[in-house]
Length: 164
Image 1 (tube, rainbow, N blue to C red):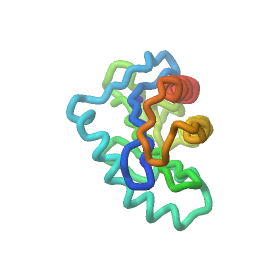
Image 2 (image 1 turned 30 degrees about the horizontal axis):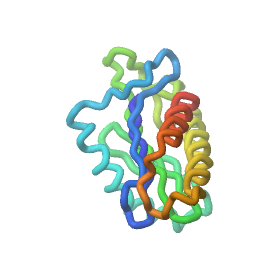
Image 3 (image 1 turned 60 degrees about the vertical axis):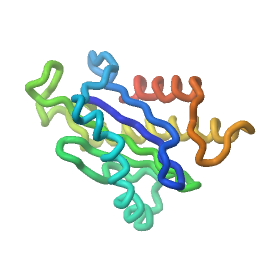
């Protein structure tokens, strides 16, 4: 499965972006987005912000699960207390692709809507959120400023390898 993760600020500006692939069940951690899909990832995430704003007022949960779908890609969301949105676009490998599996499999990489996948994404979001809070508490960080810290990027990558 390929993932595109972004943190969107309160002014709908991207604060952080990271693209990676699955590391579970023999995955190499490299994303498999096609060149066309790679160019659309940011647009697809930003187009789901309207749905996020509708859904966030109907629930008390911070984790909104899979809120949108774009062809075979799914968008999951986690909202912070300060209305910063953590968005994850996840695209399963096609069954006929090398390393692809059938849809009825329960692996995280094969079924983007299974309970196991939802739990893995929730754990990923929770760990990244904790790291975001730590980064935003730095006296050198201003609200809605792009996060350029290599330590933060490494922690997001580690969370991706750990859970996804």
